[in-house]
Length: 112
Length: 114
Image (cartoon, rainbow over all chains, first blue to last red; front, side, top):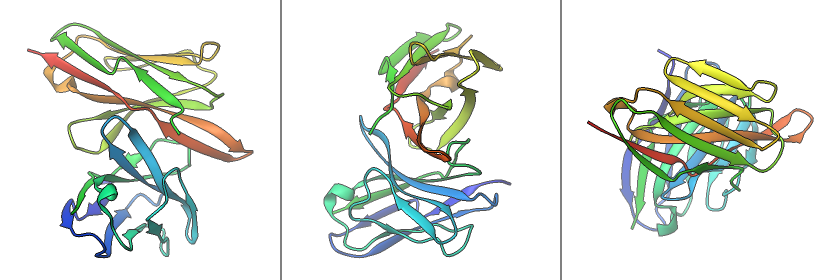
């Protein structure tokens, strides 16, 4: 089954404790992207990757890091989480940057 | 930055009625997409309409695109309780020759009452 898998789905952490949200897709998509969703703000892009070893900033990259060492994986790293990073995070993938996006089920992160 | 903006923000209709929501955008696009999100879940792609298309259908969904007005509409006919969700438009804007940026609006929340 074609899917994008994120883990963890739910996480409560404390300020400053490094965490990684994993994302994996099994559709051989070149394009992958991370979004955060906050009430009234829609989806805002954090980082994206056009292919292996190619990543770039989206609209709200501050406080986040990503890597793309393999085509299928695109982890999101919060080196020192802060409460303003409390949000619902989505990973998505696509064959092309402006094509149909396939979304993961989301990771709800709370930073205390 | 939000390229597309949906209107209305929220919509409540009776089962069996039609639901219409609109999306307006600012700059020229190559395509416009509509997505559905059930509460707290991942977004699901509904339909993609290209800039040279004016109307597209998929089951009970009908999407129109008016590039002169920079707007699109999504019509859901004969709504069902299962259509209760948030609906988002996503528009691409060309940054460079082969580089596009896909931007989402804040969404329209549709509630279908039984």
